[in-house]
Figure 1 (cartoon, helix red, strand yellow):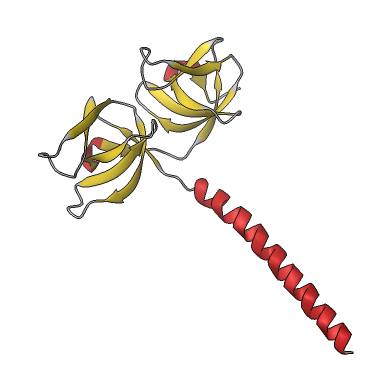
Figure 2 (cartoon, helix red, strand yellow):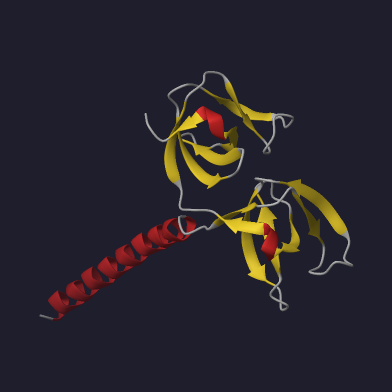
Length: 165
């Protein structure tokens, strides 16, 4: 009788550990899919070290650059962000546009460069071909920030993507 109770307790603990392991694996995936993307919605923005106009300018980013917001500054007009290239700092929130939910698109042109930034002058991160499926994470005025089925991210011109296969 006592041995049976001990075995049942051990089985219960094993099930609990298995459930916890499953949750530990699922929760990060759910959180990763909850990322909200924004894009630069003006000709350019200045990335600053601190959330004010007097702060050092770290860099400048043109229209369609994709980013995520990390936090809002105490003055609420500025946000701490991370651009798709990993650069972090502060920008004015009013210069950004929230992107719609990600959607699937297909490439319509062979041998298209997947760019490091939103412009033809940026280096290629890779090449995509006609018929390749991508997830559009951020739809911009001229360039979209996409993730390929292989997990590679980069920018493609809008005119080489179609929502129809």
